[in-house]
Length: 445
Image (cartoon, rainbow, N blue to C red; front, top):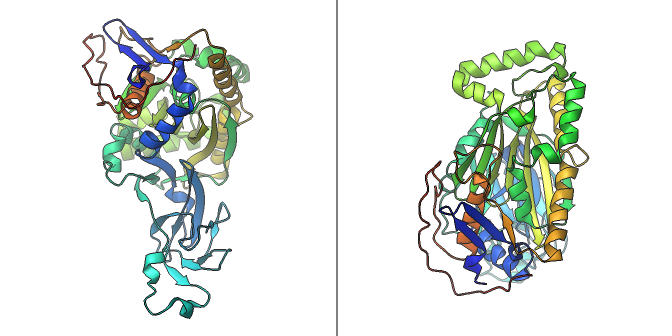
């Protein structure tokens, strides 16, 4: 099978399928590293994580060691976490504050702007030694509303062009507070033994919510005496946002700390939540404010960033470590000036559903690992994502996942990318493309 055939996309037939070898083969994973993770904008962190001069955070992005820091003038910098001298890691702790970064191997020292400022026996290098040539190196980076991204392709489009329609949904998070939004210190980290693309699908899949997370919805109904609308009756919409990004936006059926009160928050919180809602309406206008308050959003920014704006705001990143494994890290986001009681309720909502021991995350992990085991069993070549092809998109349809896979195919198979491929109920022919002859893969039967 040619790699260009791994996605079967026929709107005229109402069929969309993905060949399961795309989840299994090392050859595919290597192509993803080269053509996706070396080319796309990837989430690194949030500016609020380094609020003060000298603050730094280290991360691994696409298997590359990086760190970002504020210099003494408060400017943000991003650096490859490797000493230009002999390669050792410069930043050896996950976060902190420093005036100088010193390599433990040979004691070369760098300031918070990445400049080489000291090394033992500098005279031993001769009069032509140029320190500037051995400053820390920076990848291409940019930020949008505080969200920091890196790109290892200097010829790629700008970040704002790459975000396309996803920028609007980042606005709905970033604009929730006049004090700005911040990432709460601490994170959840775990590993899933499944292909990374399964989590991209799952993160904006409204179809699985009721059967997979039934325990959570039963729990919520019991907590408030059944006073939660049925998830099966909620209204929602799936959208393709361009460049493989997608979102599912639904009516909220539970309280939201941003400003949608519910009895399980406690009567004592009602006045404060109503005050926040009034402030939002005054600052953002009624339509946008009510959308912030009364809608939930699960968004994937291609390839591996998830923003869950549901009962809490969660940033989740998954770094593939092989064709059948990924490392996942999640952070909670809150208004910069949120009060202790409100923050406590927000964190409780986050951990209850999205925490590693919550109602949802273990369910999803089990489901994805189960899929990966099922792929290895053979016998079935294709996975189906055809739901909703012949109707206006709903929150429990699969349009947004199809958008992800179209972008994936265009990059991995080196094909032209087609945006807005689905238009409501209309049917139209798939445009002809010339497949790339570079790699063929064997079907896994």
